[in-house]
Length: 534
Image (cartoon, rainbow, N blue to C red; front, side):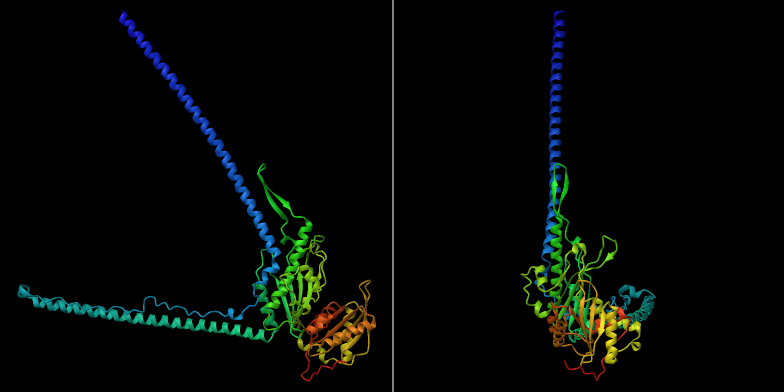
């Protein structure tokens, strides 16, 4: 009995020990689980912090790129003029000549002759086989059959070989024709370049316009700068008129800088002041004007240009009316000699324009226009040619065939149509006309002296000096010289900065059509001799 009680007591102790071990194991497992959960939470927190850090760094890198791009953009705008000074703007016409490359002949694998089938005869029977009855006859029949098959294969081979040679000849003929066609196109392209070069060398107006169009098209500008332009050339005065499209204010970024605000997780913008944008925009316009004139003069290796007129236009919308407008914001006329005295690497662009007596908009951001030195349509030869076609050349009066009195009446009528009160005077000794007119506008109006000269050759500077003297003697506020020909560099240089207007033959034709509805032409007879200066 005592032994049984001892057994149960031992069993009870074992069970208690097991229970205690299980409880310890359970507490240990709970502690381990809690530890794992704490570590997992710690890792999650670390991962979240890392994710936030990486996100913030990525956003900051984005802002850094945006600021770097903004800085690069501003540097490009500030260096518009400097960027072209290290570039030779001359367009080498020889580089326009295409290189000859003869097309490769593809024989399609037909150049190699087909292999001729070989005659293979059966071996004659030897040894015991030769003693078999009929062996020789069987061999002879096998030989005959082999020869027959060979003849058939030869016939087929000859037919296929003939077809190969015919197809090869056709391919060679087609290749020869293609080579000849491409050679003709190549030689015509070379001839076109040669003709173009010759036309540029002799200062053909169309060729000059096309060549300098190539010059401006080759100029590399930052994004946002328009590439549109129009050119016209006046051969009598070796004057190139360039109408260039300027950018709007949008070319200057409105943003001054970008910043990442970590607390709000957003990118904010610091706006550029209106004053800063206006100043930068004015600088861009000034640089583009000087750059264009520089590129045109530098590219002129044929000495075709003595004078350049630059009109900087901008296509925009008038905020007051919502209508499209195209005001002229900058206009200037300069000669090669004067422009080449400039050190463009060191000038302040806006001051340089003032030095060149350019007319610059007082408020380009408000689209305040200036009057062009010379309206483009008054010199564009294409405009005149179109009028020739529409008006009928033979039915139009030739200004060189009018009598002095008729010519004087025509000029008088023209300026009356233009709003002046004219007083016709006695015709001048050189067959032109002297006319005194009055501009009735208050403040800007006054007495105007007009002189016209029917000349075949370029009007000399002495005529411009005489007009200026007459204007001073008459107490006039302005002088206008009209000619059927053109003017030279010295005439424009003398007139610069003075209240003088020089109108060429193309200008006169345009004004007659525009204001007096007169379709005229200028064709001096072969016997025409310009009058000697008074």
